[in-house]
Structures are given as C-alpha cells and as structure tokens.
Length: 331
Image (cartoon, rainbow, N blue to C red; front, side):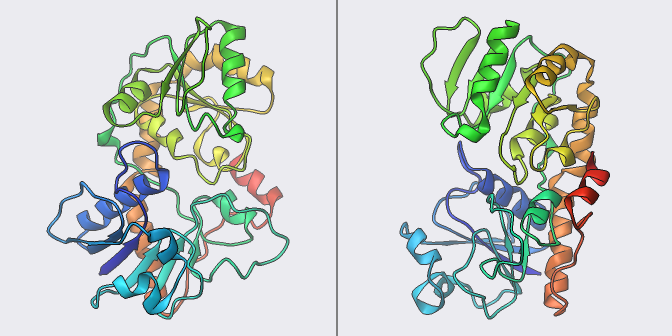
C-alpha cells in the first residue's frame, strides 16, 4: 500500500512535538511492515528507507493546510498513492480515500459535530467518547529507542509544558516541597530557589531519555481530558512508573499498582509517592511492548486504511458508548 502522511514540523522533532513523534513512529512501522510512505512536511526528517519519499511543503504550511484543491496542500500530493492520512483537520471532506487522526483535545458534544469529518480516528477510547465518535487507535512507541533502567535514582520527574496550566506543574511542585523529594522539571523554565526543584527547560534527545530512565517516577497530574498523554508511555518504556490523575485517557494507560497510580485528590498523590517503590520497572516496560508499541499502532492503522479503501468506512472499536460503560471497562 502507498500511504501519504501530511503533517507540519520535523519528523521526528528535535524537542517538543508529540504529534510529530507519533507520525515518525507510525511511518517507521508502516515501512517495516512493507508499505510505501510519502511524507508531506514543511520540516526535515531523519528517517531513511528505500520506500520513503519526502515532499517538502513551503514554510507557509499553516495557510496551505487550511485550503483545499489547487490552492492548498492537495496540489503537492503525488500521483501514485492509495490513501492520504491527515494529521490535522482538513477544511472540507476530501474527494479521495483518506483518514484523519484527531490529535488535539476537542470537547465533549451532545450530538455529532459536522466539523469532525467522517473518517476521523481518535487516540483513546475516552477521546472518542468525549467527541461522540466510535473509532480510536492508541499511540505506540519503539521501546528500543528508550534507555530502560531497573535501578532508579531518588529523583522524580515532571515532563510537560510548564506554561500550560492544565498540565498542573503547581501540584507537582507542592508535592515535592511538602514531601521533601527532589523533582526535575522539564518542559519550560521558571525561577525557583527551592532546594527540591531543578528546572531543565525544553528537553529532547539524550537528555530527555536520561531524565526518563533515571527517575523514580513521573508525576503527570493532568487536569484536562488528556486525549492520550504520549509522555506517559515514553516513561513506561524507560521502566519508570507514572503517578497521574483519573482524567482523560489515563485509566487506559496506567493500572493502579502495576505501572503506577491514578489519583483523585492530593492525599492520593502523597500516598502514591510513598508506594511507588513497590512498582516493578519490568512491568512498566512490558505494558508498552504489549499494548503501546509502534508496530501494533501501524497494524491498527493499516486495518482502518483497508476498511476505507474497501468503501466500508472506519471500523468501530469503542468500548462503551457512555461514561458508565467506560468506567466499567477501564476502572
């Protein structure tokens, strides 16, 4: 199959860019499974493969992506392809085989929203449920890209966009000060004179992997309906358990007492910090290898591509059509 992936930025990114990292692992998986991939991007890619073609988009990509037809991104499409995979929301329904991955938050809706096009795939069961749709595919990573360590330091890690309040760095900082543990904070700068806090700014590459693998646990106290939370499975791939909230897709990724803890209040977070040493790093890595690896993600997308190309639309796979059913499946 010949698949076109359309995305902005570098694939993979050097630092920040969850969508771009997912596109990189998906591209890698599709290529390893014997398919041909064309990347339409305005950045660079470090992926090399005989079946990979790169078509460079101009730096005015944001304007182009909002346009269709000959005035937009479609004029850059190659002549030979089977399906186009958008990693953004096109302005109108394409007239060729396509799927869309809805990477962003979205919002809960009481009824179907016409702005969400027909062949749209969400990134978790809860994400689809919140948008009244019925198809999702979990993200996947290549575990071999991460430095797995069973022996951890005594330092905890917060790795998210510090400037974005729903990521809730305030709770992580309060927890570190109250419980007197060392906390590395990556994802932005902030002035601090606390002996327990160390800010690293935006990180990527070796520094990011070192922080992930050495940490006793990742604290991810998200306040929003997290569509997925890619950094959580990156931590797990490194053998690092995750202390998180009950919001968004967290119940689909973090299993209490197995690869981390989910919390509903501040006291839960304090209890989780005290119990985190009981989590086996091998179990953290294992769940990524079995449920959140890039080849499984690629196979799941291929199944949806084939369904669309057979004129059957997307296959529905949501587990639970309302919040009560969701809680039974994932709590």
